[in-house]
Length: 473
Figure 1 (tube, rainbow, N blue to C red):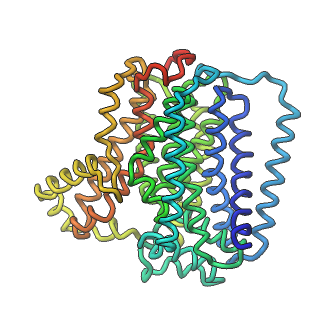
Figure 2: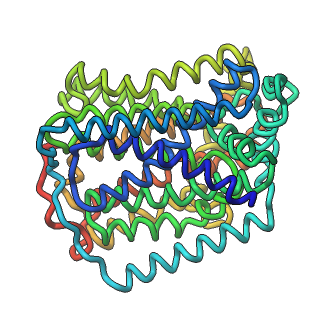
């Protein structure tokens, strides 16, 4: 019974997300994989919207009662009405994209291998959840603890931001979704964080497979899923109940939506609005989401200045901001009005200059980054080093290598890795401890996006969708 009472609000959130995504992407057609992409995207967007609704009820009402469930009903009914009205008033033919149509069948052995790996991943997830029902230590010290403050705290829910709590400044999307399930079920069962972790883990997998299939065909989509699951760090970290995989979901979703926008014909404002929402939810998931947002905007500005490509007109920027600003405003309110200062920032001082001038720190951090790139530890691997081997074996699609969309991904990842390097360089904590407890998770943030980037330029005859027409990107 508890499981049903927790699954129901998940389905509710997914339905809200799907109505928003399908409405904003109305008229954009590609191949059948786009429908799957919209489905997986709806999970993250829906959970993001649900977390904002819950948080606003806490802020405005002072505590959570049954009224917030009514608010979700109202949101759903409004979205259904908008969807119905849009369908009745749609007098224009559907837009198409230059992404191609149809789907190339994938080899049977590849399909069998993929679904076998998915089945094993599901088994590993449930075994991990049974062995560690409260997740990794970050889960019960940060995310699950915050969720219990929101669920049990009543009018004292803001005690979640006490300086006696570990990292009380962390954004709330993940923990609030857990509290939301507990509020529906009226019990803080360990099933809540397990379910949220399951949804984000496998929706990230589905999002990557569908995104690659949209651009390169079903075969390469399945191959990308095998690569993602082949990195033990991804599937082992799934049941740990932390927010790193959700952040990777929103980073990947934002970039894929930007890529679809660049290759679409006709009005594309809805794509940019969802991209803005996804980028905003990245900041609502982890502090590292702010680095991603800044990197994204900086790269787009440079691309527009150099090539006049990407988001080309002020009106297109407005569509992006429509999705971004409401979420960022809420996150900034949380940061300014509720959360204490971040320990990495507040602890900076005269010693920062000493750290920056210490050459040994550069060497140690560089070795750690290189080590993580080649690491095959079953618990923490995100072996980026294996990806160039695919390019050597299959070859590179030179036309795609020259695309602005691919270069944008590389620039964003370069800036983010540079930002992570600076964080370690200036950290007030013991450097060895900080690297050993967090570096593998920072790599995990960009692992799905990196796999997507490699699939964009991989030359794989027989696996890619040859019906795709070249785009001027």
